[in-house]
Length: 215
Image (cartoon, rainbow, N blue to C red):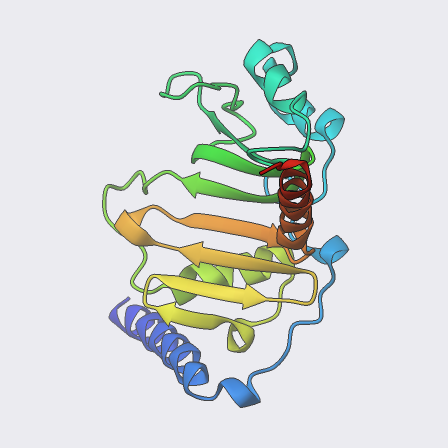
């Protein structure tokens, strides 16, 4: 038993060490060529989902008047088509408590980042371990699980910012993992240039404002 434990710890140490060493050679780091369509689908949530698709994941949300009001907002000042909605468990706190218990077991909340009501990014905050301890010695341990589960590139492709935060940057999306406060958090976002779209809309408003000004 002692030998098995030693071998497991040794293997984990080698993995974490190899993960850390890749950060010192960014110019040699492998590139992730996965497209937007190959991005992970986490608990049924997929980048690019339209309202009629993602509302089904949160039963009751389609009838919520506040959510309807958010979706009815035109893409103009002040958000220009950008919005966020956070779903929590029925027993939790928050404005939109439509997170199904079974489908989202072990999840505290899901935040959708919407661009013209479609999912441009989302984040999932997971609950702390039921054992009460912190199982995450290093974020690489979480990255390995995500890579295996969603068939992502191996640990050498990830960029670790610190022992509790790492990023996988691919052609069509970015995935950020964190283990702060023993609560895993995943942030997935499309690399489509949504910021440019919003800035263009904001600039159009500015131009209209200047054109309408009369000294």
